[in-house]
Length: 496
Image (cartoon, rainbow, N blue to C red; front, side):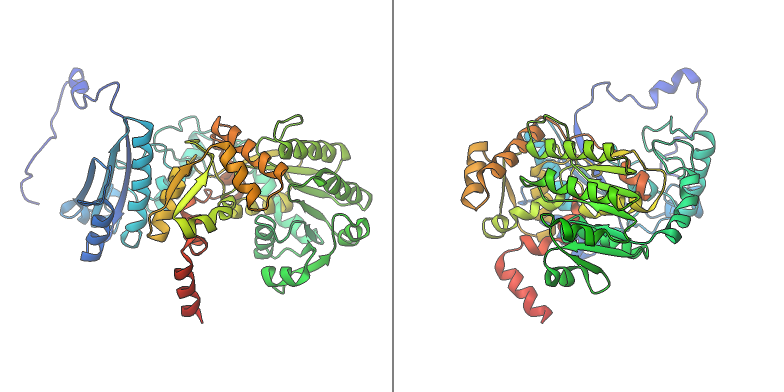
C-alpha cells in the first residue's frame, strides 16, 4: 500500500478520548437512509436525479454518493467492514425535520429514492450508515451469512435474554431461552410430531385477505386443508384445485357441522357484520361438541368489551366465549391491515390522491401474508394455547408515507389528502356502505389518530422466524390495482 493521505492512528492519553467525537447533546433532528449500490451507471444516475436532482422538488438536505474502492474493497473477508461486500458505491440520503410537515416530506422522498434505486442496490448494508431503529433484516444484511450466524450463536450463549439490544441489535438465536421472544426448543421438537398426527385444518373466511393467506401457508407446509366457502366457483378460482371445499354459510348450522367433520383445528374468521358474534360463537359451540382440538381466532388489535368501536367489542365477546368453551385456543390481534388500502385503489387510479381521515397518525400496518403465516404456525405448533398475540408490521407509518411508497411503486405522483371525519363518512355512504359501518370506520380512524396502533411488536418474527413485510413490499405487489386504467389496459394487452 502507498502512504496514506491522512493518518489518524496514534497513541493518546485516556483523558483525550472525549475529543474523538464532540457531537452536540441535543442534535438537529434528521431522517437518514443509506443503501449500497453495485453500480453508478447512467441509468442509475438518471434515477437519482429524477427523484433528488435539481428541479425535482426534493426536500433532502444531503444526497451523498461515496466510492467504496481502493484498499477498503480489496481487504479479504471480515477484516474490513466492507471487505465481503459487492458494493462499489454508498448512497446516503439525509433530510432535516424541523417540523412534522418537513419530516413527512423527507420520509416520502426517501421512500421514492429507495424505490428508484432498487435495481442498483446490492441488498447489503453498512452499519455506520444506517437509519435510526433499523429492522433486523437491515442489520443482518451488513454481515456475511456465516458471520451473522456465528454472532447470533454467541449472543444466545452470552446474552440469551437480549439485555444488550440497543444500537444495531444482534438478537439471540431462535433456540435462546427467552419464552416471550422465541420459540422454545421443546415446541420446535413437537411441531413435526403434531404435523404427522393431525387430520385436517378448516379455514373459515377462506377467500378473505387473511384466510386465503392462511391456506397458502398451510399448503406450503403440506398440511391438509378444507376451506369453508359460500361460492365454490370463486373459491376454486382463487385458491386453486388442491383445496377441499366445504360449501355453506355461517347462517346455516347444518353446513357448519358438515364442514367440521374430521377437522383437527380451525382458523376462525368472519367479516365484520351485525351477526358476527352469533356466527362465530355458533362455530365454537359446534367445534366443542365435535371434539375439535384447537381454534385460532382472528381478532383485532384493540379488542375490548365495551369498546367504542363496535367491531372491536364484538371480537372481545367472541374471544371470551372461546376461552370459556375450554377448547385450546390462540387469539391473533393484528393491527391495521395493509390490504385495507385496496379500498382506496379506485380513487388513486382516477385522481392520483389518497383520501383518508388519518391525520399524521403513525400506524403499525401489517401485511396480510404475515398474519396468515402467524396463524399457520399457531395452528400447527404446540405451545401457543392460551396465548393472545398482537401482530404488527415492522414500523409505524403515516398515510403520507403510504402515498409516497405508492408513488415509488407506480412511478406516478400520489398525494395524501387528510379529510374531515364528516366528509369521509358521507363519501363512504355515497359509495354504498351502510351508515353504521361507515361510522365505525371513521371511529377507528379517530382512535388511530390518538396513537392506538403506533406501537410495534416482535411477535411476527418470534412466531415465523422472519421480519414482517414492509409496506414497500405490499405497494410493489399491488401496484397494478392503483395504476391508472390506461396502464392497466396496457398490462392486460401485454399479458395476452
